[in-house]
Image 1 (cartoon, rainbow, N blue to C red):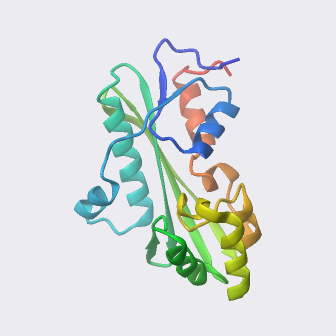
Image 2: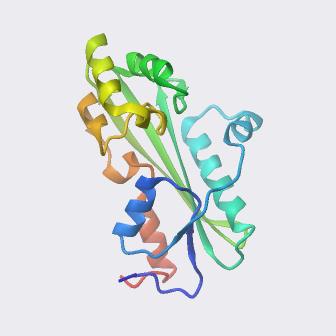
Amino acid sequence: MSLWRSKSRLILASQSSARKMLLANAGLEFRAITAQIDERGIQAASKLSNPREIALLLAREKAKAVSAHHPGDYVIGADQTLALGDRLFNKPAGRAQALAQLRDLAGNSHELNSAVAVAHDGKIVFEDVSVARMTMRQMSEAELEAYLDAAGDAVTTSVGAYQLESLGIHLFERIEGDHFTILGLPLLPLLAFLRREQLVAV
């Protein structure tokens, strides 16, 4: 049973399986539509260097891009950045890049910055950024290769070359932050907004 109570539709501007799972499990009826934007181009043009600001900028742009074609609907945009100190990571292009990223992350703590923005009629009506701190255990080259063998192509689908809800959990010794932030959608602040706007039944 869907808890969505508005005549307007809810749209997720993403095809992320994790984000779709989180919204579906929360009892929300929605459509998933990919936002056609040039993420790296937008990031470069913004000249932003703060990981939280970059995540929020891209979440906003995704929401607005889809909202422009769906007047009256509520569109959720989301983005996530990974920062090791001042260094930003993107999704690895292949196994070699994934291995290089994991070498750098192993034995260190990094931050996941998960942003969400909601657009309605092309305007941002809500936004939030949540942060999780992830400490990866020290790993030998053999252990890293074994992980990459087991995870396969999935390592190229997420920033940092891991999916915590899957085999990526084996990489970590400590995690500080909520599960939803780690999966790329600050769900609790989002649901609080939807309740304030009386868009959900609970």
